[in-house]
Image 1 (cartoon, rainbow, N blue to C red):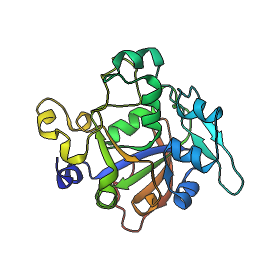
Image 2 (cartoon, rainbow, N blue to C red; image 1 turned 30 degrees about the vertical axis):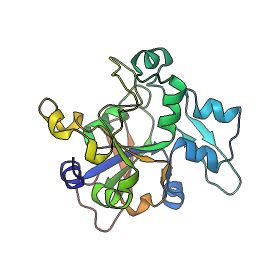
Image 3 (tube, rainbow, N blue to C red; image 1 turned 90 degrees about the vertical axis):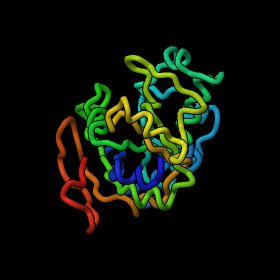
Image 4 (cartoon, one colour; image 1 turned 180 degrees about the vertical axis):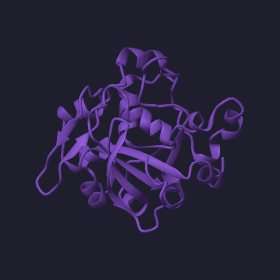
Length: 230
């Protein structure tokens, strides 16, 4: 897959954060779980519990001089199911550490709405970012990976996953997968190593969302269009 093909087919990216997160994201960037643990000075044994094991609930982080941050729960993951679908000799701990080292974006509205409507999150107000794919890819293409699955879920029928799950843009087999998959099920996740400190440069709009309703528009870039929302 070429970068231009990626941008053409998935012109917008979406990220779900906790309610009220935009101010901190705008000022400090979007950080992976591992990057947040670094920034907030979390050390073992708590760091191991939060960064190398399943998080059954979201966890607030506090530190002097920093805004409140929240580590998203990993409720869609279950260790037993994860162990059965892992490949390449990976352990659940290694998979959690891999996921926690990256920032995640959905490539379709249907996926972000599916997450918003999930049992664990429905009824809870969330902050949703809508981003311009082209500008983010142009700036961070060397740190971007694409996933063909929801790598953070083992619900229903867990799909196999391993060292080859995440691929660079040029290595992703989009055309072959397109023969049997709809667009939303071809490239499922776009992830960036560690963090996106300048993420505000790529955000087109920020909305407060709960269940299947957009409650309000929190922020919008001057060049955003009417369709730039989840």
